[in-house]
Picture 1 (cartoon, rainbow, N blue to C red):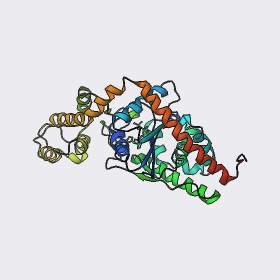
Picture 2 (picture 1 turned 180 degrees about the vertical axis):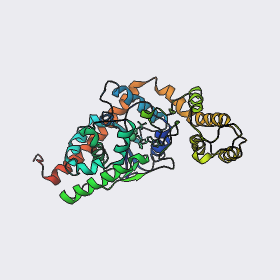
Picture 3 (picture 1 turned 60 degrees about the horizontal axis):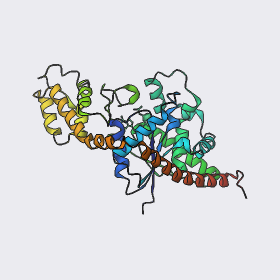
Picture 4 (picture 1 turned 60 degrees about the vertical axis):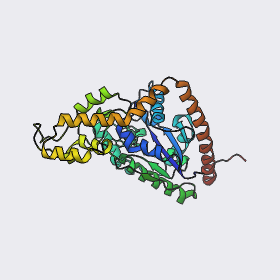
Length: 329
Ligand code: ATP
Ligand code: MG
């Protein structure tokens, strides 16, 4: 019986991309049997960068379809929206007393987001993103958190908060450990540091082969390889990074061809597009089936939220008891 708990979530801001897949989702799938997995749809967190909420429900549905298509099994993993379990808001409030604003202002992930999205005035809730995330993780006593590397600073904050709570009121929470993959920051098609929805540099895990080709053709490669026969530098090329993940069989040959100049970028991109499409083909196929039955997805969430709520209520009782905050006698 699996007992160690995994907790990890994603913001429902649209369909998932390859970064989500290789940075987190693949790990979730492969760890389903060895751990007890809780996966949350961080719909409140989506409000940090976009107050428009009318698409949240639909985006949540699309994201769960992506999760299931990629191999998440609802019989093994518990799936839920944090907005449906009020204990998240309650624990977030208590945790917000256990961390200083200067600590939150130093958060490098926040600074990156402010820069990338040109945010001029940050909201109180956005500053507190990692505090709500700490509540998300610790309500379920998550011990292992499989995430991309942009989340590591948030995990440090989660550990600090757990430590502070345990020292102040008595032990309730574990110190959650991150688990990252080899591709914990997949670069975007624009050659930028991170594939990201908001940067519009993504390939979706639901993209069909034609779309993958079109997008791959736009990818930025080694700027010094101008003509077909110029020797290239695979180590600075985004497309080569994708080969190292999705086309391991041909990786060596592609490196050789690029470095010698015998392989041009167009051909290299087409090979890469084919390899990516090949890898995501089972996801695309399964998605077509799942899209036909949204009612099933809502049932899965209803079931997951019922299970998650029970655990969250128990943890909050423990918290209230340790803090001597009016437990009903
Ligand atoms: P986007 O940056 O595309 O808007 P996001 O960062 O808002 O997406 P999150 O819900 O914060 O999406 O991320 C979900 C998970 O996917 C996190 O664990 C995050 O670290 C991981 N992730 C997102 N983008 C990448 C990437 N390019 N490479 C690796 N992991 C990633
Ligand atoms: Mg993010």
